[in-house]
Length: 237
Image 1 (cartoon, one colour):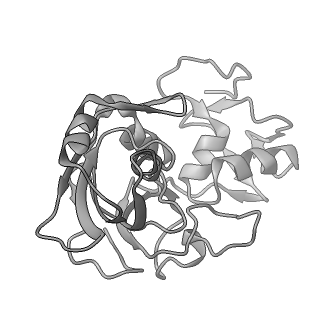
Image 2 (cartoon, rainbow, N blue to C red):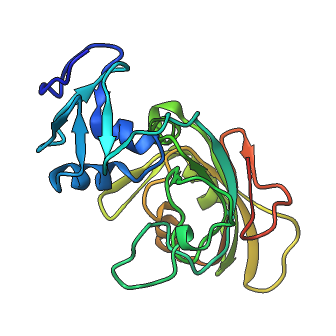
């Protein structure tokens, strides 16, 4: 199979060159596109000048003068994200990142969705971008479960209405299940929350709309995967 310039090529065995390089574990897809533009990638003896190429199994891909390593099998890791880390590779504010604090021995990975700076708990990591996108798709309706500590008066009736969805500042959020966890006293209590969309800062925005302040947020499950007793900063496959 030869290199094709048509990025919409429908050959079932052909894939975008940047995706192939990323799957081999050399870098991210975005970095692979940059490498191509920098003249570091050739296919079948021809130096590429654009990432708009697809390649197949018989194509010979060379990166920095070396043959492309065999693609890694898809792997999924459960990581206990501590608070105080941003879920990004590079941060424009130079804040500490998840990927700079992963335990040793992991391959190059991407996150399945994100947890914000002050949130903690289960973050899925994978070396396969396609798997990450599949797990993130709203159509797959994978439940995200959280425990959160709140400050403020909570009315059970208002929490119950969240199962019908809610609109906050023009953004529509889908059904949210929320229940009070155990007995409580004073203005602080814990809630158990389950949702399926996981839009940006969804829980914090919805709770703020209800007049509640979230002072701790822990994701305990994502689909069938559970945080369980995994220590903060640790990862298991």
